[in-house]
Image 1: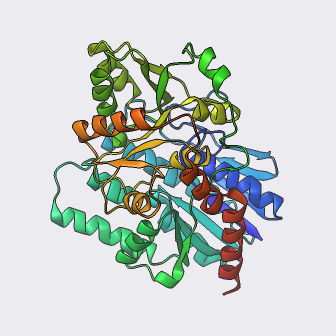
Image 2: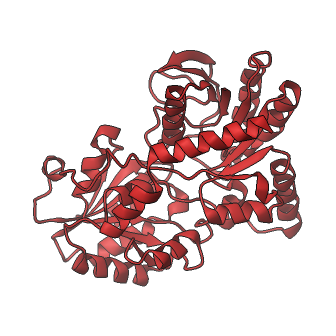
Length: 412
């Protein structure tokens, strides 16, 4: 099988879509798939092109069996809605030229990851010309996220309807749409995608590497914390859609309890704003650290007493937090901001104790939930979370099932 991945994000990005794309492609190569990827240079979540890569030039390389084409794009330092749209558009254009180089290589399938939807028209045209099957994989419903988080300004019903009709028109023309949750499947159906053409392809965890048996004591000491201090950890992208100001408000509430420390590990477009707010509030119980290499992630997760999964209202079923998979795998105790009728809310109801849910953007409820977990959670593994991870998030099982689905699609 010959597969082309078309996506903004790819390894060596440490979080989110780039991490999953990188792991997927390496695993597919070990299963005998010829993989070519058309991607941007690594820039996420720092919103800065990594050292050793260029945002202005094409670059080709073969890395661990994967043929990689890096495409130039505009990466704004200060992200706004207009700059984000330009960012997505430049990659759509540059990646279209890269895709042209694959025109006569007889690919079997093109796997486009949303975001960005902007690449969809040319991918569909390419597949029409080559006979390749087209799959749109939805990690984020970017249109829903933009409107749900107010990134498009005041809601104009006519403009909203027009943009969503284009999204629906494009999605229905792919041979298959895959996505990472059951609520996202229902969303795709609501957008007009035939249910029979939808593939469930969730994010995963390396449950053999991220385990409750990992000891985080050494890393906790290295970071300057005492053994008795309780660590409330947020790790991942620090962006606007998270609404992480609520964590600073909680830290202000707990500042008299010197035994509780709030640790942000990550980077993102909103990190400088958050740091500035923490300084204004004179929060001595808040620490910011950079993203950690993958080999340290299990230790990082193990040292935390409480894990935070924070999102704003309107994002829960448009953007599913990928960080949760590893929190569950390590058997962590997590506080998750989500409405009861979302995928995460229903998961918490079905698997009682898997994590603790509170209403998004509600400081008092957030503090109340955090207080409950700090008083009740122990150093023991959250067995409900770990059992769920073993049963539903194991990487090999998910990728094997996905490969079967793709092979079935190709034979149609």
